[in-house]
Amino acid sequence: ELKVEQNPLFLSMQEGKNYTIYCNYSTTSDRLYWYRQDPGKSLESLFVLLSNGAVKQEGRLMASLDTKARLSTLHITAAVHDLSATYFCAVGMNSGGSNYKLTFGKGTLLTVNP
Amino acid sequence: DSGVTQTPKHLITATGQRVTLRCSPRSGDLSVYWYQQSLDQGLQFLIQYYNGEERAKGNILERFSAQQFPDLHSELNLSSLELGDSALYFCASSPKIGFREAFFGQGTRLTVV
Image 1 (cartoon, rainbow over the protein chains, first blue to last red):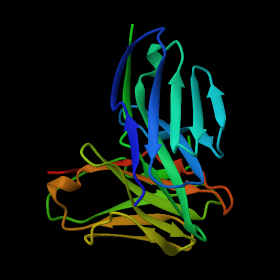
Image 2 (image 1 turned 180 degrees about the vertical axis):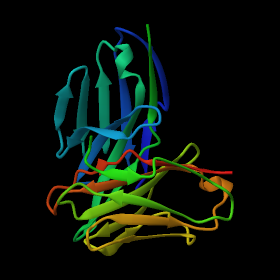
Image 3 (image 1 turned 120 degrees about the horizontal axis):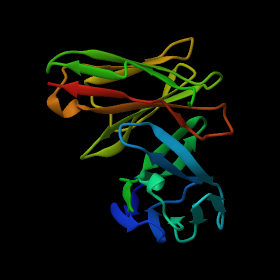
């Protein structure tokens, strides 16, 4: 069974600082997703990483994927309050035909303090 | 707006009751996924439908069932509700085969009292 582990689960950081969220997964996958969720809201897709060495950046967030290590990172640069949210990584697996399943990590609750 | 519509947004019901949650996928999306999000279990995959047929099952209780109709909307039926079923239920849809990014609806918050 595929397991997805995120750490840390809680992250409190000051504005202007940098930090990294880690996502480890247990079996080979064909893609890795990062989502953002604001309290009581839906999940917003941030990044889809398709291959080993993939790096994507959007604003202050940068995601990377190392399929050999089964590790993805979400790096936050010079955090601002608006980035406060819960961040999920999810691993996608195709089990044949149109059977496709996303398995989520437990999420990282990020709080950016002034 | 992801284009995935879920109704109702909030639902409060008593233990032992039955409820139906509805999901309309994005136009053209054939796959619908249901997820349950609770504080203790996180985001759990429940079930997937593709073009009307059940394709994958996750941690879905026997008291729960789902279906996808010819117009591709889906319903999740929860029966004999327990307090522990209180959660946020998300529906997601994904585009045609070959592009698998899922788009999530706003969710239905179910409170069982």
